[in-house]
Structures are given as C-alpha cells and as structure tokens.
Length: 537
Image 1: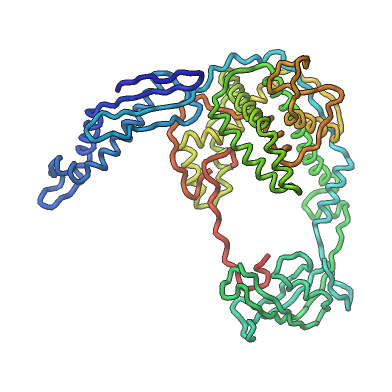
Image 2: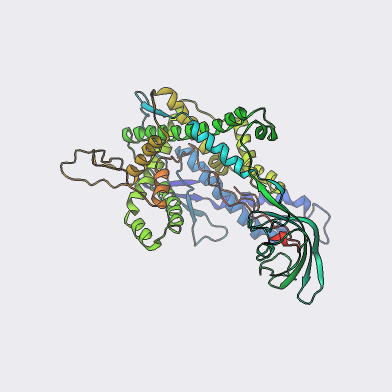
C-alpha cells in the first residue's frame, strides 16, 4: 500500500492511500478457498466446485467485501504507522472511478487530538462551602412525607363523598345500547375522587354519593383507549356505593415511624437528615468542581479539534432549543439565544479543552476504571431497558469501544476530579443553603455573561475572562441559559485511543444518558388496557 500525505495543517491531516489490485484479488481468492467446501452446485460433489464458477456466481459480492476489508485495514495501518490519534471518526472516500481489477485510491481526512501540554496541577487552592442540614428542613420533609401517607377511615353516617374521599363501588359497564361489555364488571373497586386515575367523568359523577346509593354514570371512552372496540364510544356504568372513606391525617410521632418499620421518630428523622445532607454535599461538590475547572481552564490553553467543538456545540444547542420551548415568550427567548450563539460555541470549546486536559491528567496519574466498575456501569445502564433487551445492551457495550468509552467517561471524569481534590489545598467555610446556591448561580451567570473587551480592560482577552468587579451581579437567566451554564462546567473526557469503527447499535438495546450513546431506548410496548374505568389511570 502506498501512502501520500496531502494535508498537514494544524490538527487537520489528509492522506491518499493506494491499495494494489493484487491485494484485492488475493483477498477474493482467499475467500473463495474458504467458501468452496460449503458451496453446493448441481453436477459437482461438495467441495469440488471450480473456483472460476464460484467467482462467476459470488465474485461481485466477494469483491465488495474484500474491498471494504482492505480499506479498513489500510486506514488502521495508516493510524498505527503515523501514530495518529483521531479526534473523530476519519472521513474515508473511495475513488469514484474505481473499476474491478484496478488499483484502489482512498482519500482519508481527519482531525487529530492535540499534544496536550503537561498539566499544571500543583498549587491548586479550593474553598469548600459546607452546609449543616437545617433541623427545620428535615422536619419539613418528614411532615411532607407523612402528608403523602394517606390512611382511610369510614366516613360519618350520611356523609356525601367529596373530592379527596375514597368511594368503594361495584360496577357494571354497558355500551350505548345497554349491553354489558367484557371486562366492564367489577366489585369493591376503590375510587379516590379527584385523583384523575379513571376515564373522564367517572370520578366527578360520584361526588355527593352516600353509602347505599345506586347511580348510572354516563361517560365517553378516550379516542386512544386501549380497547379499540370502546375507543371514542359512549358508555354507562351502573354503580352501587358500598363505602365512603375520608382521609385521615397521619400524626408524626413514634407510632407513625413504627408503621414504617422503624424504631422511633428519631430514626425516621435520621433517614431524612441523611437525604438532606446528601443533597447539600452534592451542591458543595458542584461548587468546588466548577471552581476547580475554572482554575484549570484559566491556566491551560491549547488548540482543540474544531470537529469536536462543533459536535459538542450541536449537543448544547439542541438542549438550549429544547429549553426555549418551555419559556413563556418563546420568540424572545429564541432571539436572545441566537444573539449569544458564539458565547455558547466558546462554552463548547471550553468543555472540549477541559475534557482533553482531564483525560491527560488521568493518564499521567494512572487513574483507571476497573473491570468491576465498568461491569457495574453497564448493568446500571441496562436497567432502563426491557428484561429481554438488557443482555443485548451489555453485549453491545462490550463489543463497541465507542459506546463503552461514552459510558465510562462520566465516571472517569469524576475520578480525575476526586484525584485533583486530593492534590488541592482545601479550606472549609460554613455557609447557609441560600449562600451556597447563590455562589453556584454566580458561577453560572459568569459563564454565560459576555465580557466587554476594551483597550484598557486589563484582561488577557480569552473566553474565560469575566468581570468580577463589585458591580457585577448574578443575572437572572431563562431556563435555556441555566442549562448552558451547567454545561459550561462540565468536560468532555476523550479517550486517548484511535477511533474505532462504529458498529450499528442493537435496534432495541442501544445506549443516555447516559453518557450519550448511539440510540434512545426502545419504546416499551404498552400493556393492553382492560375495559374497566380504572384502565385510564
């Protein structure tokens, strides 16, 4: 194979590969020899079909396969020989004038990962803002939880059912011509009025009912109802009210805790205190991580592959456009978004640079993801799929290096960040939740706010400069900008490996969240709805 470099500019590379026709022919001959024992043809004993007849029958398909294999091998050899580390999948283009029996000319274009300068991780200083779990917040969460644990008591005699009550009924469903339909009969069904779990009109027509009442409810099944013979059709339900129950408020005390299997109210509060502390610790880590990334971004500057920046920008922009749909004035929000397009592109560039930097720090300091951790990641990610697809998803992760890298990246980033926390000099300061949230909000505001450059601004004029003067206040941002601000403090951790040929994801078990993998989870089939009023819930 002959290789000619046609472009070497910055991180861009281009090559022309010439694959001799004899190499293609040799691969076809090898394939013919391999297939011959299995090919059957009238008039010939098994394994005795002449090679020329096999080529006549299957030659074009074999040649296409041989050509694809030769091109893949050629590109892989090019990467190895030149020591190239592709930033994205290389673009490979075959000569349009190629004909069978001729040499093959292949054009390969790619961007390579930059040589990241040795990261400077000494002298990192961070402040850890800590918040003690407020007792009032813990008590409020306990009270809120208790209010959701409804218990029911028989209503006073003659009490008419109102919204919030539960009515226990027997029912018979009939079509408009008075014929009971299959699956439309039930006994002792508990209906919580106002819960909205049943078909429209069923619950509201039970309001005012008392024990012993008999009513006929007139309803219309939704057009998308699961049972097609009833969808969009009018129907009646003859009901008999057997019980009316009223909600009984839970008393937050030791007895309430014991109903939950706990020893005492103090034990219940300990559980909620742990949840509050976990949330606050997450906010503390978020603030510290963003400050850490700010320091790294401010002290390292190197060229990043434009293709990676564009891919990251496209991802951020897609999320921003989605967030705009939730704004009250979508037109104004979209106009504001377009005005800040270049700021978001800089955010994408920052994320890519930080990702490459964290990857380099991790490799230099032997930060690794163990096989056990990777298996746990794959198992956790597989839980979002149907049981029959979970095995296929795990096999897909194990067979596709790109999918595995995407799944691994968030954990790898966290482990590198934890390593840097250990290296940093950290001081603690006790603050309130409001102060911690305001500190995070200020970082987000700075990440979005454009810096006004002037001849005497005193900055280095890069995208990480921000106005930290006393006049600079956190600005209220729409949801779209908040999403981008959070994105700005993430990193795109890149694997320092040649890009693997991407395989098609299993149709029903592709990869998220996760980490963004190839396809979204396959939609689960909806369970067939019975023709009972509760089926709408």
